[in-house]
Image (cartoon, rainbow, N blue to C red):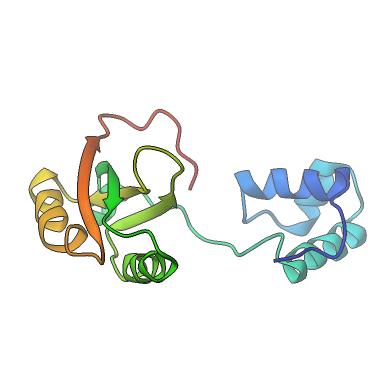
Amino acid sequence: MAHDRKLDRWDRAILDELSRDGRLPVTELARRIGLSKTPTGERLRRLVASGAIRGFRAVIDPALLEREHVAFVEVRLSDTTGRALTAFNTAVQAVPEIEECHMIAGAFDYLLKVRTKDIRVYRQVLGEVISALPHVAATSTHVSMEAVKERG
């Protein structure tokens, strides 16, 4: 979304604090950035209204959802026309196991972050779902052994 104005140091400070803890009350946020409550609240409302803040969400422990297995999947498409890319992009949105999807400039077309219960379930999702997405020609999987740094 196009933003009405440039971010200043106060806006950046607000975004930095909220990226670490999105549940901060405005009074605590104001204290942390060194600005009073009213201007902090006004800035926060403008950041939300402008789309700089896209939303707030809970970061949930994947183990509680039985989704500890993480694989990164390189996807090569058989067709990269606009219509094919749109079909792939739309289909990816409907697959709950695909946590992230990035179009890549390089040896393959997309990189997917896929979260499942275990390797057995991953293999099923790869074979029955990901490989069946529109225009998928080939995939290559990289299994994560440990998340060293991850932002929710």
